[in-house]
Length: 360
Image (tube, rainbow, N blue to C red; front, top):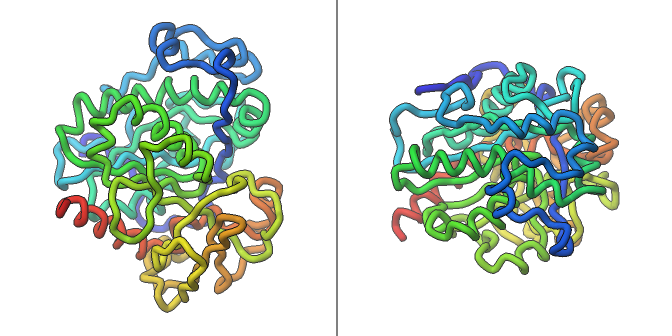
């Protein structure tokens, strides 16, 4: 690997990331930041950027030809399919953030990215070449404020690091291979914008997308309705689709969860059904344990169609962890374990969708 810093071994789930939130909201055309404007005036910050410290760093573009700006950048492709993984919010979760937005070389962000890569991006390692870029992310609080008060800034922010990274990847690294997009929480927020805008601008890339795992953030009915070029998964092996869910315990019913949106849609990560058909823990192919190893599946799953989430009732919430997360994710969220609870099923599903894409 040209640049691989994924930590393998003992990774505590409680060292996972409290992940940022946000929602793209349709704004009048006069207030939206168009991608054309961003490309032409890449050094011009929107006036709303003044509300967030650190955003002036966007005046200095990240050079994604530099291997130092990747957590994982394969020197040679060993697999026939790539995955681009966007890590969740780790900036400001293990240490106090000095500003709203991270430097690209912020060490706490890089360490957190490696920890989450070990428990999340590793799902794809058996089937895919791992491409994991560093990107300048925001704290939870900053993303919530941006979502609520300045949602047009989300378009500007994703265009700076994420779009530039994709431009570099498709021009110099992809070499025509099929690919998967994947992320969690804040990473999945940026993926919703990538799918909506960047892929609409590049249908030639979308045709080669095996699937997009937009986990830990809501994909809504309204989002799908306004993006006819996108479709949500209906089963275990359809391709070119979005896979999305948020995991909660029954105690989160009617509670605030910053990543759960009205009219969210989800798919069951055990039986890969869209309805409320129950899947027992016996059908779970393996969950990650506290030491980072794959053990017997401990989590069951059923869809709550009204709330649009996956309900897990077979495991107990960790009181200390839930208390720390409650303000953002509710009293019984399994947000940090969206990948780890269903690790074995996700791993197999990646292989199944790749096989289906190759048959196609």
